[in-house]
Image: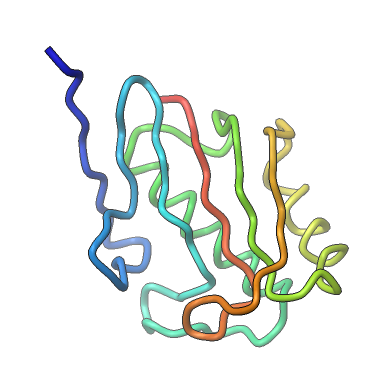
Amino acid sequence: MPASFTSIYTKDAPAAIGPYSQAIAYGGLVYTSGQIGINPATGSIDDADIDGQTEQIIRNLKAVLDAAGTDLTRVVKTTCFLQSMSDFAAFNAVYEKHFTGKPARSCVEVAKLPKGALAEIEVIAAY
């Protein structure tokens, strides 16, 4: 019999802007969808710079992970998308404050992100 999976949802993070879940819990791991710097209270990206957007992304990820019963200390892998690699150093400065366990990571530049975001992060965490 296949293992079951659970869709994760919290009102403390932005609702999905498409046909997907905020996260899925399966087999002892939580797989989050990518988070951009949307403030869940306003539904918009309130910060124009990479620092502010990255802080909001991490707040969103914390909320989703909390709803799944885990946290940033249990993240094993992140995938990061930057609209411009010129933001790499500033992005890393915020990232390293929160991902202190230094999970495995991929970071790539992409042509565009939803809603004109400067960054997006998705994570895999144990729970």
